Length: 227
Image (cartoon, rainbow, N blue to C red; front, top):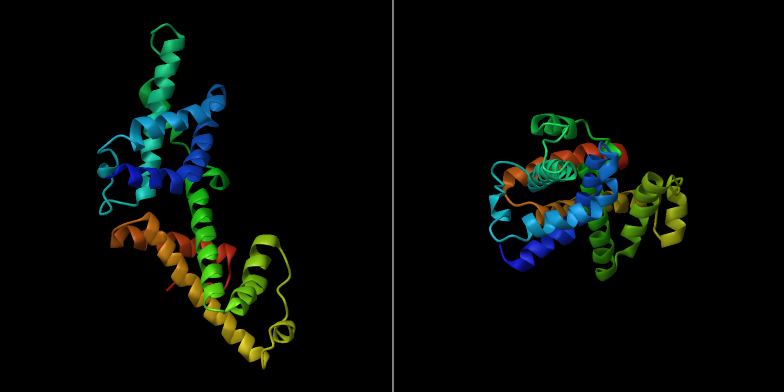
């Protein structure tokens, strides 16, 4: 993988990696202040090293799972090394097995790598859809989707009534507004798949991510379906 590709991985996953690292370090209060340093070391010692990312195999699982396990293993090693150094090279209080078991505990979903990743994918898909609608002069489709789905789900706003949408966008009937919303949902689903494909390679990995997104969208954006 070229240096530019490794930098793209850092750019795409930086937010999710940081969220996951903070989650991991929540079990070790004395290490929290060093989260930025740990993340930079992980990037330099792992992601930026030639040949390391080639260990990710899309046939064996999702790329984000590879990143998660790699960061978790790196943190285990670093905490153990630092703890031993503080004790003058003596054995750490926790054995490696105990440390791995401790750090592998359940993640708070709101702080997890997976939730951060899902939010990134959702944001990317929405940005692409908005740009696409603007380029194709279908801004009314984006705005109808925004007012009927996005704002109610993300901001707690009341969905605009169809009669109001008809008046606002010069439509002929509420049925036309309903059809525009159906078009918007299909368009969003296509953009979502396209964004997932930027993060994953391999049919199995992409399929696994789409399944994860289905569950996420069922709760966050009711009525938006991924076939």
